[in-house]
Length: 348
Image (cartoon, rainbow, N blue to C red; front, side, top):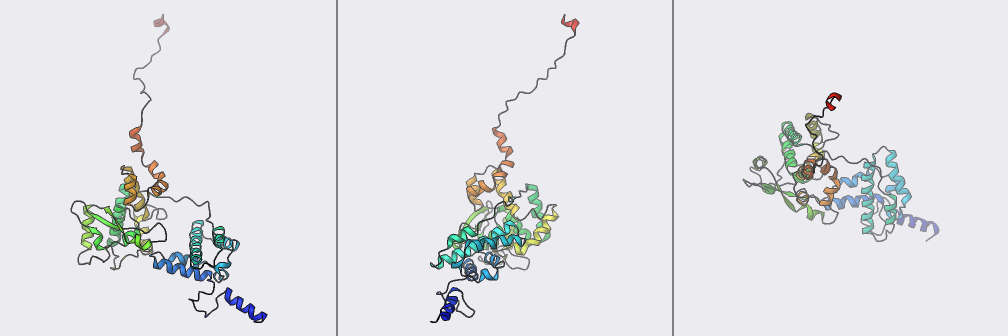
């Protein structure tokens, strides 16, 4: 090849060109293609494809077309900081950079020629100084009003809210309940709740296929039983008002405005209270009732360590009545006898 032919060959090797076959593994993968691969990976492993789209929305043209193997920490850090300049919150920036880093690391696992994984870690660290998440805990009366307002707002949505209030499950888990998951025992009914699949990218689908038992009240079991009339065991247990199932990957997109209306109706701030408040309240309620923390964790598809980390404030703030049982009162009550000063005459 001539000098110019060699330059053109190098350019084509370094960057894919329009019309090149997508499955040509001889060419280094670009950042845009790495995000595409990550989206397909999430879809195949029962993940949320939006996590990949989140990163794609903010890729610059230059970064999207660059081979992953040629990335360096400085340009990745500039891209991350540029998200702040666009007005994104620090929490949103962290979520976005996490998805891009996951896409790049997946590309490196697929192609051993990508050896600059250290640049991904150094160039895309998480931002610090984020406001601490507020886990809103509702008292029992507020939870009952939440459920009642949801049922008045729309009965199908209200039934979903009732399930979340009694089980403390995540909305995505409840959305995957099937008719066969209801065990309608007249004394001790339970739901076989599908697991969330949290805990890593490997075996995610297998984890989500498993279930665990969650007790529910006979009243809720009766309402759910009515929903199962004429439905096959593998059909969704909870449906929307149009008869379709809730989106198990991103159900909040279908009920977000409903939640805001219900929270407003009970006199709370919809910017503060979400459906997750029902989960936080369920976990806190169980801890206050002195249910062993291991059982609380198992019944809410989480770990003891996670409960201790996330709910430590709630455990302290809402357990005064339990801690008071071990209180030793050492101060004596003041005497009821009054001290009267004697006059000089009487003293003499």
